[in-house]
Length: 288
Length: 170
Image (spheres, each protein chain N blue to C red):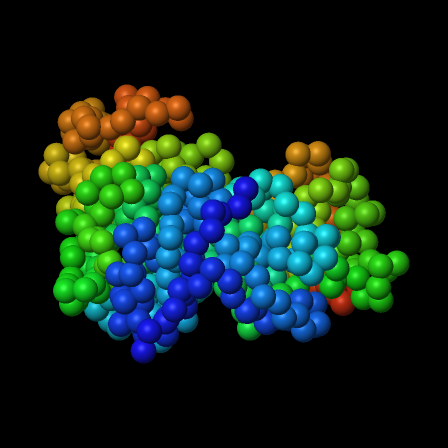
């Protein structure tokens, strides 16, 4: 399996990258390439101009401050995963990245590329939505900022317009004392999730105070579980699970079937993961 | 300034310390470049979509799937392949290769180069714990051994690494 012929360019500035992207209707951005190149090898994606942004000045940065972490479009997942400063400010990035692919994939794959690709089963888009990340986009009309909650529109479908590229993403620090849980059901370690959950939970004295819950692997965009967020408030470790399970089922009615699992299985899995996260978060804070 | 998009590119890189320079199609994968253009066939191609890890090589110190990278992306890079592991040529074995041999960590051998390059790229101290070691090895598929003998080989090679040929703290 080899990609079909295409023209390649390697710009060194964002302006050059945008010019190259605008030169053809079927231009694509090459960052880590860990999803794009397989799609090209399979000839699932038609690319006429491939714009390699890996040597664009300033895009490979990872910057931390007490308020959050900013990850440039060419920064690899390994770089973010291994960065102790990042882990201390936005712990969820390390927790989520441990589920992403394998070492060899993370060595090339990028955080921003995962957002742009928007695989319904990917962890990072769900983390971005749960964390309230802001995505910086550059395009022919200039720069704009898109909240992660508005960015993911469906499977492999984002708010990016033709000729636009992500330049960086900002993950704000979660509330002090919260715990970020990324949990999933997958066939093997490193595989894409059949269904998964990102939970950023604040707990107090053994009871959950509030949480942001985002399900993924449900077939479409990452799904904010708003009914469950209401139901989880006040949860303690010995709480019965029925109400929370029902809430998740109500939040995930749009889940899809595919060859890996039925919609029903996915919804039950996300419900079980949510109950597990609630138990873990309330137990964690009790011990602390 | 316009950056021209081209269907053929000049690539200059080192593989196992030797300089190579070729004019190649933009679409040429690094894996095919290594095997077909340079002629180093120790790197094996299994799935060609990033699933099996057989084609793992080291690019600027990092283990990568060479089927998920274009040759032109390695322009200016230092690449290492399995041919670089034996210390004194084809008749010798590196400690990890010797441990694979001694522990029957391969049967058909198709996946072995990928395992060896993954292992060569990492700091053993970060991956020594049994669970971490299995996590590391999960990025390479082996359909013969069931992995047990690979784990045994890695444990043996890394215990020797740890004590520099002497003591072993597991």
